Image (cartoon, rainbow, N blue to C red):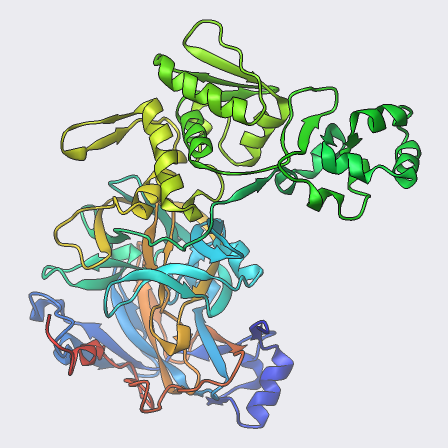
Length: 586
């Protein structure tokens, strides 16, 4: 699939000249290197919250807002915490093979005026790509334009599933806020970013971060379905950091078969004077082995990887089975690592017996001195646990890499190992787990949701449950922001799972569909502590254009899409209630 491209200033001028893109009125000076500056019109829609007890999304909310027009010389005053609708002065028209993103000017964002919002680059999102389901920083997904799927819910059925990423976006720096929830989940977003909350009638609505309060119910997944991936195979050398290249040796039947006169020459040229010893023992330093075409890929479970000068290596590759998954969970709960050793402590002999047996199945020796701890001396095993991301001591513990994509029976074994270490099971199947690792809490929350043991809130909507806001904190950080588009085949999924532990966030703001024609509505929020003045005609945002992989089959404005805002003039109130027309009652 070809990559989605952001149009440069040269291409934007060409598209404007031939009429494929229309921006009216247009000042040539507003064309930037990869965007066009847009200005604010003199019309605003102010919310009259006192007129209604509750916003019912099933009803026409025309009376909820009042249209205000200001003169060319008078500013509009946007007060702290206030949210209004404005519109661009310009009419924008797009062809059927381009989409656009509208972003607020970063200089205004620094003053507290927000239009569009996204996530900082380090914030994790759950991505299914290349046969793996894992948590990845959104910056990595956007900049690499990862062609995968994210976890999101269908707004019509509230079913959580996997939906393809259909676009990537990097925006200007913005101020970052952190939303902490009662379960230990958290998400870092900009103040204008939409999370999903519950209104007084239990309906799902979007709420900007700046409007969240302690006690607000925020949407989280009750379950994450399995992606039906096979049991993972760990290939040790695939996890190897570059710095370990000269510290390891590979040995075994595959290595023996690779010995030729050319192999001996490589050893001698690399300065290994005991080439005959390596041939006799069927071993090769890794820096030499990697020079033999196909050797490292051919290594299998009968071959081993060990440190130079060490004796206790690990299989070059092995499949994670229930016993190994249990051992990894038991280590996360009860173990620690230091250079050359893994130590696991527990007062129940049967549990240490099981751990000993699993390590022995990997060909590793175990020392058991005092009856309450076992020690496995292996530099490579100790480093492997680090490469799997499991940490070394209690405060640094994490789940093993890739655990979210494991089959459920392996996840159950992983959880069993953890519970056998630091957990307890009470009445009515209640499970409790203790940890002092801040990173392990969200890992465990995601594991429980993958196993279908998420919130049992009776007010849940399908696969969507609720968690309560504890705090919304201004971090004071200003970071580059990123966003993804989730609209497979034109369907309005437009949400994805993000943050630590998994919080459902929206990504609809600022997106302009292929085929759009009209002025653009601006959602304006003041998150500063002082009023902000808005003058008609001032620069308010910038629009960038992205080339689609193919022309849209049903562009915006066509009958199949049900476009509600085509040819709009000025800020239009929500037409969301139209989604409920001709919809069967439940």
